[in-house]
Length: 414
Image 1 (tube, helix red, strand yellow):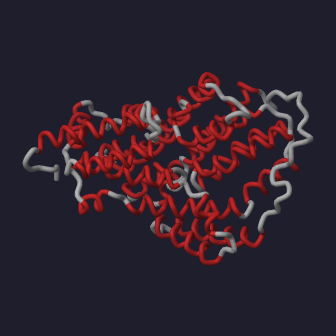
Image 2: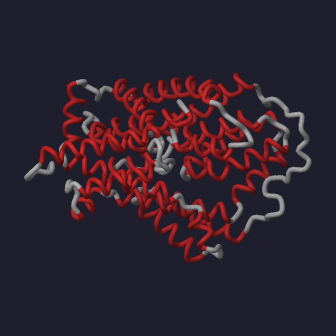
C-alpha cells in the first residue's frame, strides 16, 4: 500500500523529486558536473528513499527482486569462465583461419547474435569487441561496419531468450513465462532481425567494407601466444549444456544458472579472482538501486498515479505500447523503462502478450541510437582511439534497422 502517515504529502513530493532526478540521470548517463554514473545514481536514489522514510528495511527486502540479481550474476560467472578459458579468442582465431573477408560480416552477425541469445549481450560485447578490432586489422578491413554489426546483432540476438539481456531477465522474474514458450515466440523475430541486419549493413557498406592501406603484418593474430585451456573449456561446456537443458525443461532460470555457476566455481582450475574481475558489478549495483527507487515510488503512490494516467490514454493496445516502450527505452535506457512499464504489461487482457511486447520493444529499440543500450556503449568505448563511430554513422544503420525490426516484432506478436 502507498506510504501514509504524518507529513505524507511532503514525503510523496520528495519521493517524486528523487524518482524524477534518478531517471533524468539514467537518461543522461551521468550527473552533469559530477562523476556520478547510472549505478552511482541508482544507489544515491535508493539511499534518499530510505532517508525520507518512504522505504524501510522490511519493505526494501520485498522490493528487491533477488531472482533477477542471482540470474544475472550467475550468467556473468559462467561467461567469465568461458572468457578466462580462452573460448572467445579461440573463436576469433578459427574465424581468421577459415573465413574470407566477404563472409566475415554474416559470420560475425550470427555468431554474436547466437552467443548473445545464450549468454548476456553486454558481456558478449565486452569479450568480442577487442577481438573484432584485431580481426579487422589482420584482414585489413575497415572496423566500423563490423563494430556496428557486433553491437546491433548482440541486441537483436538477445531478444530470443529470457537470459539474453538484463531487461529480459527482469521480465522473466515478473512474468512467469516459461523459457521454451518465450523462445518459441521471439526466436523467429531474432532470426529475421539478424538477416535484416546483414542486409542493411551489406547495402550500406558492401560485402567487404573498404580495405585499409596499412599493413597488419605486425599485429598478432587474435589469441596468438595464448592457447585455450581445453580442460576448463570442457568443464564449462558441460555445465553450460546442463544449464541450457534446465532452462528448456522449465526449471527456475535463476536456480539453474546459480547451480551451474556454483559447480564451475567448485570444479574449475581457474583463479576465482580473475573470474570475479569479469563480473559487471556496476550493473548489479544499478539493478539493486533501481529496485529500491521504483519500490519507494510505489510505496509513495507515484506508480499507481502513473498507471491511472496511462489508463486514460489506452496504452495497452499493442501498437501504442510498442511505441511507448521503444521511446522510453531510448530516453532512460531499457532496464529503467521495463521497471516503469511492468505494471502496464501485466494489465493487458492477455498478459503474456504484454510481457512479450515489452521484452521485444525494449530490446530492439536499443539499436536506435548509441545510448539506446549498454551493449552499444560498450562497443563504442572499446573502440575508442582505434575506430571512431559518430552518432550520424551509427544512426545510418540504427534508425532503419530499429524501425523495421520493431515493425516485424509487432506484426509477429499481434
